Length: 346
Image 1 (tube, rainbow, N blue to C red):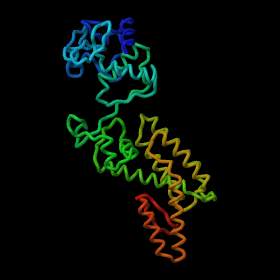
Image 2 (cartoon, rainbow, N blue to C red):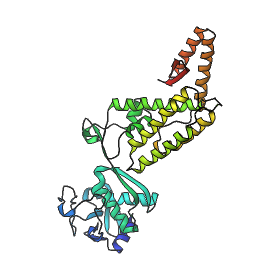
Image 3 (cartoon, rainbow, N blue to C red):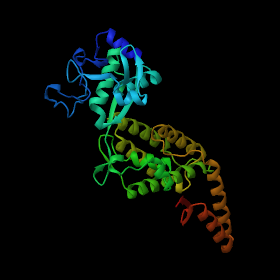
Image 4 (cartoon, rainbow, N blue to C red):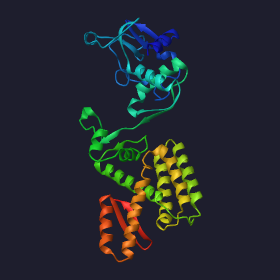
């Protein structure tokens, strides 16, 4: 962290004044490019922090701040050649990313409310230090709202991941809920929306488990390769359009709809099922909402359903009911149709 500051001072991008070190934004011609901010029209003290320190330019930002009396008493400072200081958070974030990700990495994501000045200042530090902005893509995600207000601890309306998991929501449920809106739009948090996400994840699980359970060797789904190609093409095309997750999910659910009918009718072979699972695994590298570790459970469920079918054919309704109840305790709902028995998670 201090090596970064030393290099910025040596290159003329930073200066020391009264035991604090500041970044000189006038030395970076494209400062403000990310936020598209016009510093001439920016009100100091409102969108630009005014520290209790002397600067050459009020818009310059602190890299290292001299420690105050209270910080000195509590030992919250570093001893440096510039004096007893504490680092600014823009410098801390730049130093952390450079240490663990290098001077150039793929994506930086933060809240949209941190685009200026925080992300803008991280970019300034990175460019002055290495000539690269740091990330190839800078994304400012909008906020999570509760009753129209920002979710935050200060408003006492914050909900943690631990809270949600304690209430019965899995990590995949929460992730799918968060995927439900484009990053440029705020997400409205509600129990109803979370429950809807949970129900959708269950339906996806049912689809994946049924694919694992396919034991048919006859190929009766001639469109399988085209359907797989369409998913791959449409999914990537949507993500290339400013991470249009809504479009990507639409392609995903359209694919499920096209596969579900022949899957229910027993027209998908084991070979085709493996092809379908393979593209789903590829998609899941991005979505992270599917569970592919339940093949054994799928086979167990299928085995119970086959036993129940045999009991029904033999007129052994008592055994069939017992097996239905056993499946229900496992969270499986059995549906009898003209095409045969199908199942889904409740």
